[in-house]
Image (cartoon, rainbow, N blue to C red; front, side, top):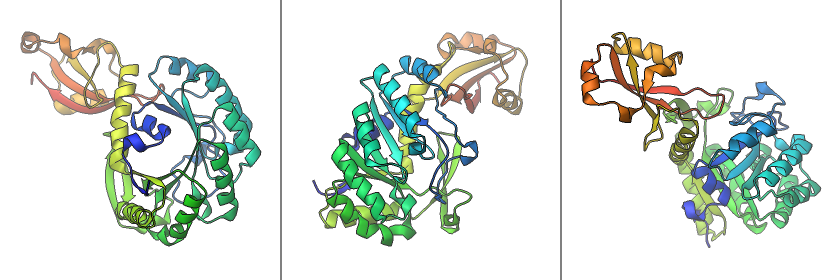
Length: 347
């Protein structure tokens, strides 16, 4: 098959699970041995294991038991800097969830072939290399990727699509194809405060109804240029154009999954993955007063009722405040729901 942008059915199983919102990313450490200006990881946290389901194996496993998840990824920082920790977590979770799909992200600097062999035997299904971290054409890293292609069922290169880096990437695309890299995952180039790429023309994207992201407006055009080059050269690479729009589709699925998992008795999960509830308050509140009260997340559950239990007569007769509320679901067990929309229905 010649290189082209692919649909969900052609993605690696890891990407399919991600698109379905049914995977847990475990950041084994935030320490890293590369210094990528474009990296959004919070390095101030240092050597700390973090995930949406907690930071220890027993807590993570307990929440996975009650989830509909299908996969786990290991990331960082650089997870190969804590290789023993990765082996421990992979071995434990593979025993507990043998049907799960497991993959890892790396810049490739710290790993060696023996480590890859061990991880494959322990059940790691896929490995993804960020070659942008090593200026794309590092012979040492490309040799490791070639070895990985002999060891793992699936090997991918996953990079931000940085327009200024196209001349460095183009000749490497042929090498990736020659060494049997199966997937090339391209992300829109997200601009972070420490990145000199901030001088690029930037746009704004609101992710998951709440998070404002700045991105290079030429990044998608760069991805199309990469796709066209690979297609014209008849390369076999399967290219996942993982745009911000596609990531938002993934976040919709994530909201649906996490909403069902973490909803309260008074919540209804909408088709958009929001938590819908009705706020019933004894005093009459203006919109701004209701917004301030609800956004502070200090209103007890007794003031919320399930939408399906409220009828027109109740709304008409209630002398206080009745409002339909939409919250963004928590994205982790220690997160709070985020207020998204208020509709006063008896004002």
